[in-house]
Image (cartoon, rainbow, N blue to C red; front, side):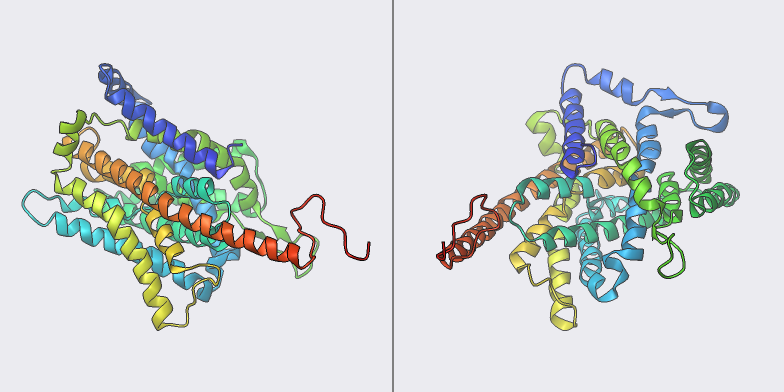
Length: 416
């Protein structure tokens, strides 16, 4: 059940809603005390708050799964073929560049803060795919494929941005040491050794060393995911040919990621005391919040749909025959659901618990909700359109005397 896309998205939403409601009750201080509670050994600089453990530790599990997905797409998925990958790659680039530009334009003044430029660039895979799964009964399958490929590329760029632009102090010695457990992990998985008591301690050690290096610790999850083989190498047609451990690990770890890691992170990250309508309006006076909302709602739509149109118009890259441009616009709106990674980048940019961090959360939450609502309205209309087409084709097939594949009791032929 936890492997279902809708389940992960609903749990993520539940965690965020619980945090928002709790943070706006008279017991808000209890939420803050829980989020700021420190646990862990101080001798190795791991006496972290629960909120930090969720952002640095639990999200590393999420990014491990993202690393597995990325490698699978590059080795055996849509990204293996440059022509098929061109449109979603261009869409991902446009969908990150335009929101970042909009954020920067809002924050060029004296009250702005350019350090948060990357916040509206992210797409939340779990949330976006869950919304699509709920509203899609007759939408073309190519729409989901396009969204998944775009989101995978978006994750790759987001990981790179976190590693390059949100690393304050880089300790190269720790980073070099981290390569040792990562290399040992890679050696074991290449030999198809999946013993937990060997792999989990190596993964944990790699996480600690990356954390100590100054690079955000979630990058360790991605690097470990990249080491896992997607296809078991063997002589052509040999008996040992087949899927590698990536499929097995993804099947094993995804429930932990979707059912625990992401919802718990959402719970600790989304709790912001809005302060009623006046507090909401006050937050939206901050150019940071305005840049995030407009970046997600307008920037993502223009960036993804616009770059897709430009590439398909002026190159040989073709849009899937199943899709219309209205479908692409709806998908572009859906990709504006930033949530998980946007909240993470906001914390890295402004720190946890600051006034501006609260404004970031308001911007991310409001922008993501608006994107989900707008995309749902448009894609539901498209879903009705495709359903009418299917029903018309069914009527035509029945009129021609062709048995309906979905009919439990097909009509008898005239010969009977």
